[in-house]
Image (cartoon, rainbow, N blue to C red; front, side, top):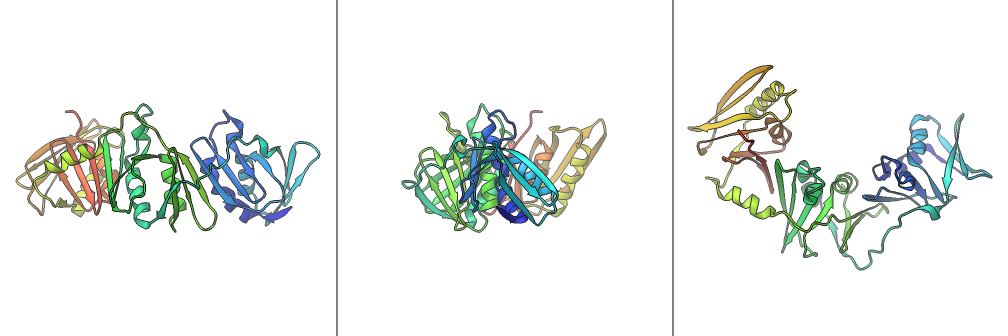
Length: 348
């Protein structure tokens, strides 16, 4: 069987994020060919994309992808040998690849016929993309490992946290599911990447599937938690303590000041800087063994007098996407339309 190398590479590269990075379970590092589609599953996400082939079975994903990426051949040829190997030819290169029967695959796509289904909108994609900034890695807190979706009538709230920051997006959305769900980080990242042109999302009790009209499908199991975090209460308590409904617009010079502070703290990750507002003037100060920097600027709007210490690298990470900010004694608040990002104050 012959096929275009670039067409094959394009199809298989979509599956790469669903390949397990370590061969603890060998089958999870394989790409599986069904004859009409190809898929990979790493025990977190599964990705399926259409591809017509004359054979069925699985092969080591990193090997076939490596060969296709390093080749300049226009076509590749697949031949089944008399052994359990699959012969792949690309120009003068010949690869004998260990080949498993399709029955050895450990995963198949569940049936989503009875799922709750809704359209993937640009607003949903943007909200998920925005909120990924605060996804954490603490496996002892399930809510940190993805994005929490909380439906409330015709409004959908999306939250994430890494213990130092909390992000919240809210979008108009005719929610068809009633209970909160947690989407794993890897699913969210691939969803934003693969479904920019829209599609459908289907929600079951313990899993989610996104698919588009081209036959691309992205699957994951929902994250379970027995003690869900009180996101609404945390964010609302901060917002209710603020003096004004409108945050102070982010001055361009503030972004540059944060960049300068970040340079001083480049080799001191997590080191806090002092932020103080007095009489509508923002004062900033950072000090390390490498240097000491002070900066100040007058704000364009009225702001409470306040002071706190906070990691400026966390501000730098989020400020470019923010239109306004506000300081409270407990956190920095960055916001844009339908999006709030809270950065917790550091201990003095």
